[in-house]
Image 1 (cartoon, rainbow, N blue to C red):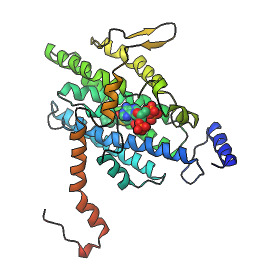
Image 2 (cartoon, rainbow, N blue to C red; image 1 turned 90 degrees about the vertical axis):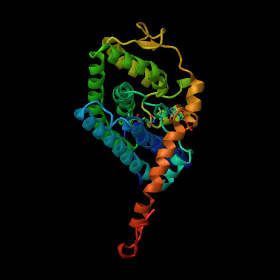
Image 3 (cartoon, rainbow, N blue to C red; image 1 turned 135 degrees about the horizontal axis):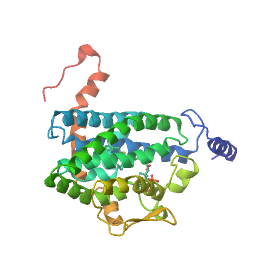
Image 4 (spheres, rainbow, N blue to C red; image 1 turned 45 degrees about the vertical axis):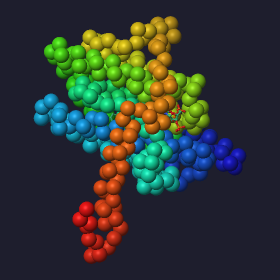
Length: 310
Ligand code: FAQ
């Protein structure tokens, strides 16, 4: 890299300026941003799947409508994020190819099944809560298009959070069976939720460079701690337990103490070997194949195009 340009670039970041697509940037900054925004976009479309399967089964018409709107929002977030990643030079088709070929990662948490309605409630409240903690922080980051996409996403996610909280309160104040279903969902999802913020800081490969260039505005452990700080009291308040006997707040340091989740499981899941990875990618692959005629039709002059019968 040209040291003079690099110095000027870092000075701009230091001053809190936004970097825009046509500005000079180090190759590594571009590469890291593409990796992170692309993974984020994939997480949104794959994230629509576990909840999406509950649209037809959501209890009652109002819940169906709200869940349908939420899932639609998540897919819209993917569109915003793909558009932001495209400003860095990687075409959307290439990103989708990397997703369905298993080359690109997406959030660990969407590789677990949503067995019951309570699992869908957990996702809508707590997975969205985790996503908001991360996105609110990174919306103050250095890359203009990503920050602007995150601002819009956070506004919509705040509705998801309210909806999800409402669903969980309903379960908590319902019948014994409903409370039990919700507790079982918390037990199932707790470890993936702890994994969601990424490996511990001492194991994290990219945090240092991403924080230096203000792409990531807090480390994985800090984000995890902030989530615990905001949501553990709310979960306890509803009368639920969390499946970690060590979980407590150290009043002196202000940090949460917890049992490290199984990081070997995390590695397996993010590298393609989780309970639902194959199923999730198969759905995307089918969507890609079924939508191919639309993309081809868009490229072909109207008069020449005949829709294939199969
Ligand atoms: N899942 O060096 P680090 C949502 C990978 S959106 C999978 O610490 P980094 C909305 C990482 O990529 C949720 N892989 O990585 C919604 C790297 O692998 P690589 C998604 C993970 O980038 C709600 C390796 O481990 N949000 O939920 C994960 O500094 C409800 C080493 O890790 C975002 O993507 C993981 N959890 O920090 C939708 C936010 N964690 O690439 C529907 C943007 C780490 O070298 C329903 N991303 N890895 O092969 C970020 O903030 C960061 O990328 C982190 C990871 C914090 C996720």
